Image (cartoon, rainbow, N blue to C red; front, side, top):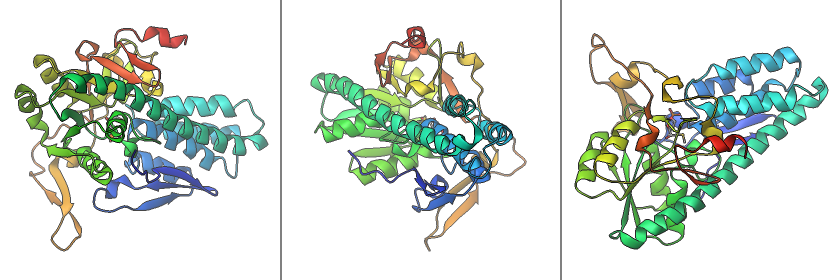
Length: 351
Ligand code: MRU
């Protein structure tokens, strides 16, 4: 298993995060001192990935209540954190859980309870990651028994430890497989425009996992050539019918996988499954700033990070951050309870 740098931890009455806007060039930690810092961290993607966004929001509530734990402060924290990003349901899940734990308490009991609940959310996410890793490993072992060596797994975006509080969602089975000695190789798609695939490459390199970075558009060709044995991606929201929102580009990979008979798995904790959301059409899809498409960041020869413009600002840009993959294109959903059939999520409501 990889050595984790903590993506999120409490430090006294502050919270420390790994600033993901500076990766993969620089490993830099930021102290969040209050609600405004937590809001900025989520909105500006200093933290990112659905489970980590949820945990950060929970710690944001704890930060907000440090000096004033009145109903008004709690409501204000809930409102401003909820507005940061629309698609990842873990944000709402975590805030609902914080409300349910804190509102019934007297204000003077809320401070300590908020830290404890946020810590529980963080711990439980790490435990869910571990279970996802075990269930995914069982799948990969079965595939490895019949596939050529090494087993070639494709992933998209970053659903590793940078996106969670533990070993990740889509990457947890890969870390587990590597630790178990399975011969695996990971295709990492770069994930324009925010290039989260570069974060995945950075993570995998730190853990010594064999991997190859490819442009997003290479995925279909690699599958057509028989060079992909399965795809595992994360999720930002899974609707009750199994339709899954994940980083933009996921849908195209799922279509290519279906065309070439490549198993396509989504790995996510149950906190990403939104049974109140009937289907993919009801999932709000975040549209982000046009400059994310117009600009690229990279390292200059002198080691400084530079941003370069790719296109004139006169060209219109559309920048949906996520897309929806219909449940029918998924082979299974790997969560902490096991590998679920995408069209059979309803029983989770009562389990
Ligand atoms: O916009 P981001 O970077 O917060 O996107 C979220 C993601 O990391 C991915 O969509 C991921 O595949 C699912 S979250 C583990």
